[in-house]
Image 1 (tube, rainbow, N blue to C red):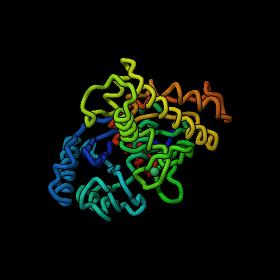
Image 2: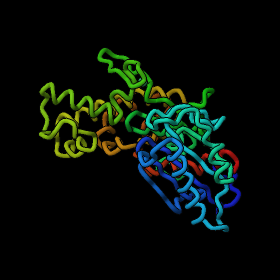
Image 3: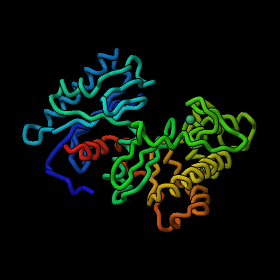
Image 4: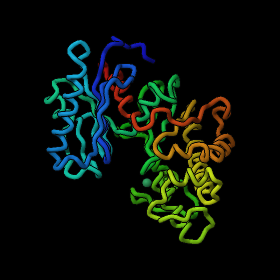
Length: 324
Ligand SMILES: [Zn+2]
């Protein structure tokens, strides 16, 4: 899969623009992070100021690389609605003022190297595939359980973006059933309503309010999936049940995806992957029962290995795929 490697000493710049943090790194072709910078997105006092901050950090990283290992290209991951082919960030809901931003052109002009833009969920998937828990698999899906549920689909060792340059929007696959919850996309019953960190947190708060038994005694505003993992480790029935329900829902969706595509692995990353051990049993039960393309023993469902740096690592795979 890495047969087209030209030079293992090559370096790239990687940029991951999140709603909360902007991360950047100097990376190798294999996805090793040589240097790393991070700052809160809110430090940008205006859309233009944020761009200036980002360019400044990337120039610092380029200086650190020196002339011997000068980066060949920049890989950019961004959330929201993007147009990868045009290099335009059409709309990033969490970054005020960034609309129809020709980000690859602006970065290329400032840094004098080519730049490629990709959806952050896709970059996350590419990172886990290149150097994380998905390494060695040709056909896999990487799920990120965060505010929503993102997906990066790798088929035959290449990122699959479909005809509309999208990520694998697995979070918006409908679950059906009677008790459908409202999704951030405006539709009812999407996977992420029950399997995202935000979805699981909301369900927990509702059920505590409804008087369901739980060990939680704190402020409801502070209840999130990290707290729920700690509670589940202590045997809390409410947290354990919500994680099991999320696992079951992911199992239903993955059964469809595995049967359709004949995948060999699913990697589960993002903040919600902290609950992996509590999600897996019910996920495995549903998936193993409904999968016809292989047995559960022949595939792998594993926790992500790279955490929040996965998109930076994925920039290396993206640039490899673009021939840099
Ligand atoms: Zn949705």
